[in-house]
Amino acid sequence: MRSALVLAICLAASLSPPASAVGPGSQLPGITAPRLADPAHRVDFAALHGDVVYVDFWASWCVPCRQSMPQLDQLYRRYQARGFRVVGVNKDVATADALRFLTRVDVSFPLVADGDDSVAKAFDVQAMPSGYLVDRNGVVRYVHRGFSADTAVELRTEIESLLGSGA
Image (cartoon, rainbow, N blue to C red; front, side, top):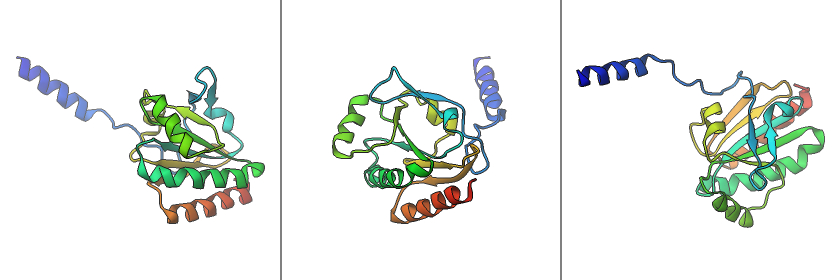
């Protein structure tokens, strides 16, 4: 009887629809997350509507993040006056690990904590780092998994296109 129950539960789980990954054409999830250094204050993703936004999932243990974070900060500083925003979503379980990383890699864009995985689950993050470039209408236009010098070039071109087109 017990094995029949386990089999039924496994079968039911396999029939349920998989989590929907956020990809090009998807709406930016309407979620909030606590700021990394000040959890009493939250970042509301819905409030970013009207700007071009890059949501970047990163962690202190992520080797490519050491390259991506400074590059993202340069893009943020370059384009923020034109309506470009970056939100870094930290995946470390311990905030202290993230803060230690930030003593070596300084960024000026807002950072949020996601130790409970609620933001990552809303996006169905598949790799680290993962970035989602969102247009002014709140629609995800590009998804980047991993990060390299080529990614930085592609991202700059995509940002310029979205800022220039008014999309």
